[in-house]
Length: 444
Image (cartoon, rainbow, N blue to C red):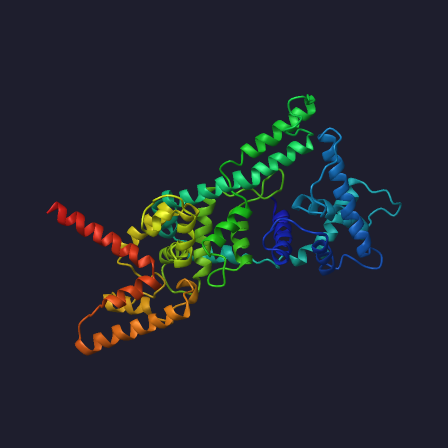
């Protein structure tokens, strides 16, 4: 992709993200009109109504071309006009001739179109190239570290791949099968008449190309599945990243197709780079190592699927015995990830990866106070009821009073009950420690 196309892609995605962050590569008519007004393309000589007619004419020509390929069937399941990046480039050529007519006789040649387009870009369009700054690229470049990338590309790659495969299967079941059915309708082939209808050679070729294109996406996820992943693991939330920031990350790690100029799907390798980028962006204000930023993001993901409300939901939906600890619930394919992360976290001594290093390691009492502290963020405590929060404060106060009074750690049964009720993930830690202790005693 050339430099000018790259700048135009930045402009295009800026308007797409800030209009609807769930669709970062599609425009509607109102987005193109807003862009034209910002660029001062529309005027008394070229009004908004004329601009809208040019867009409608372009989409109509696309549908006619599609009808020729589909054996004369002009079919479109959507009544809303959608403008993709190739359409945007073509519209710029059309608009350039209208705004800056190069030939006074009304007959334009390819050279005239090139001159008009160059003038439109230099005097109107490229002035907006700084609208979408490369903030993600700058943050990742400044904090780029080999150890940080190795965390997801090597250490957690196998467990994260299970999560990725879950969303690949989700794309196959929910999106690609529907797209394949829609293409079958375009070809006039449905289940009721597939046995008694003979396709022409052109229809067979078109159907084969569609199936090959869908087959080529078997190991990819689209932006729709990526946003579902961010929502399921609460990465897209007020506590971490906004919808626009998530879209920025996707656009920076997934390139455009060089031929079609359409957004490609996301590979597992691209997902790993997206996790690193999101970690650097989410914790950019923290003065910690890049490796700890990635680990803090993975810790955030682990807590997202081990909160009390999500555990109850998963247990109520599961049909069968299953394990008793959170990792075995396998929500969103995260069972292997949860089991692997909790073992890695235990080896590190259960640290808070977002803490600034001070050179001293916190004691067990300090860790317990931090876990029971009512000042922790609401997004990390699972959103407990008011009674549970009151009990949590009482347990913390009782624990602190016991330490101050006797100088030793006193952990009563009601403290453990309150701790496990407000922090269900800690039961997993106790379970693993007891299992390790049992194996050690058995060996002796």
